[in-house]
Image (cartoon, rainbow, N blue to C red; front, side, top):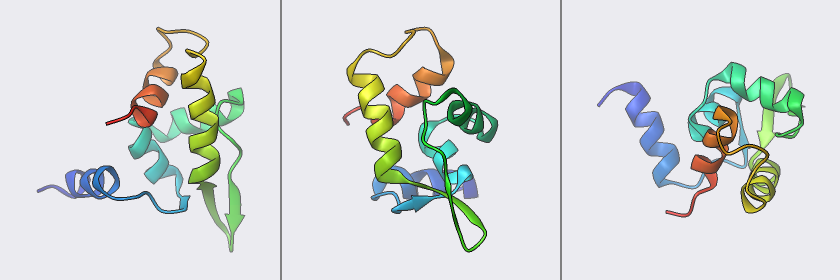
Length: 92
C-alpha cells in the first residue's frame, strides 16, 4: 500500500484528528492544498489557527462550515470546490 493510500485509509476509516493540517484537510476534502487556501479566502472554510507555529484547522469548525453549505445545496452545483466539500460531508 502506498503512503498516500495509507493516509487516505487512516482518515477515511478513523475519526479525523481534532485539529488538521492543510495537507490532511486537503486529503479529507479530496482537493489540493491550494484549493483549501482558496476556499478559506472565499469564506467557505474557516481561517486556520496557529498552534506553536503550526497552522491547523479545527475539524469541528470545518465540518460545521461545510455542513451548512451542503445542507443548503451549495452556491453552484457545478463548482469543483463544492464537489470536494460535498464529498467530504456525504453520509457513508
